[in-house]
Length: 332
Image 1 (tube, helix red, strand yellow):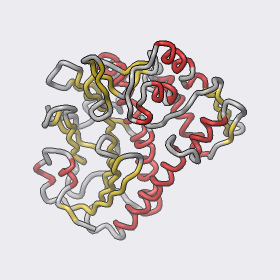
Image 2: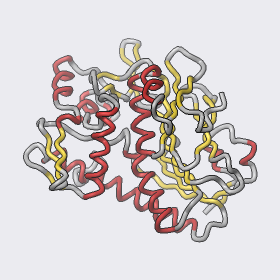
Image 3: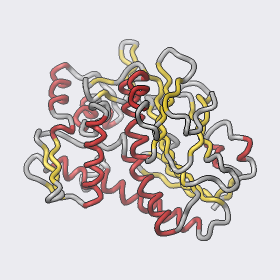
């Protein structure tokens, strides 16, 4: 397993104080991206610990993916309209958290929009403009308000035929949280950084000798530069942008991040990042911020001292930062 001088080769430019930091890095493809776990050099059985955490991520993908008919989420989508479906305990807790986030963001984040993802062609990465009738039908078959969660039986029931969960906007973060939990409880890890594709990052503790935290640069979505650097200590960063999944029609660009409230691609934001206590929350809220815009993100963060947002609205060159100064925010 290669030993590299710094994790921050992933995030340009690397901070000067990380030059001597040595990490053991283990990576694997999962959830259509590359997950990587980096532990300080010298941690006992580092490769074994990281591999076990990646094994867990593989297991979670098998449970959460909508691209396999055998997954638990696909089973829900196929049968939960007909009758309540009991689900694994941790998955039920996760869906309850998704429901709470949907309500708390006023629907700007809503993972019960698989019908909309398919309507716009993003399910197969074949973007298209739906007809108005198709769009209305997909909107009617979307929304977590149509999902019934029964704590007594740990079961899920759909109120609408054709409703589908698609956990793509939160699944990577949830997998990172579970992987970090495994590293902490089973292997005694106190210092590590985990990421899924670079857009979902979770920091455990601080790097050895660097009490300011793990430095992560936030890339500009379309230019070869960064928006700034955020330092993370026992927290996570999620970033939403339509950088890679989009299509163009009649000179207009349509990104894959959909606004669940309208059923149409979100517009007005080039990039939205969120710092939060968990990677699942950072992923979900960065999506909500991208959808609802900088003004909404600023209002949302103000009474929540553990959150911060880094936003780049369309047509601007400098990112705006919202949230409490208890975090080391981007160096813009």
